Length: 303
Image (cartoon, rainbow, N blue to C red; front, side, top):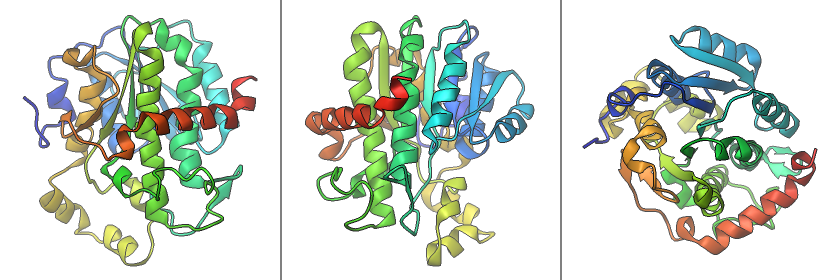
């Protein structure tokens, strides 16, 4: 039985990933780097994605195992499409996709392609990547999708996802828009699971815990100062009880544990199934988000 204190190495200790191929975003630091390191050590071929090829390559050079570094800038949908095309051109099935990368609580409203940047990066970029890799996942004996959500999905905007204000033009609060993007990750896992489970692919969402990682690089003001203080890491570990190896454990557990091969549409925290908010279990909202996303991404999907 694993707990919140279990590490990524511990939850995969008896797992042999030889012959498996895993696509993972955000591998250049923090949870993504640790998860890539551990999964590669278990025999997986990890296709490690970062914002630039240089970052992905530098990260992969520090890992023992089989790593293929690729560039995937999630806020640049042409970059996501190019990355997916490169992966699809490989003559191998994809067994697992872990959507780990993200940005958090941007203090100022930032727009790109008509969307607020957190929603574009955390949701749309990942949605497009997974959507384009569906056929590869279907060829796996046991395909899995893992979306990194957050307990922050509970502090979303009114209505869960405000489809009339995804550009932040009516109002903007960094934390609420972060929560909205994390709710979108959770609902995306449910939506993909609904559509792919009969084809042998299961999708789940996870909350990694509260960890001082590069996600905090966008914070300013009092919070920004706090997260940059030398003692912050130690304080976070003691108060919240999560180191990076512990924080990376739940995504590794959900991606690889044999007991979860028939489990999908769930939300995991501390290496066990957790509870979501009302909006986090709302199928109607998940379907509406799916339709909106497919329509928004139509020109990238149909290339």
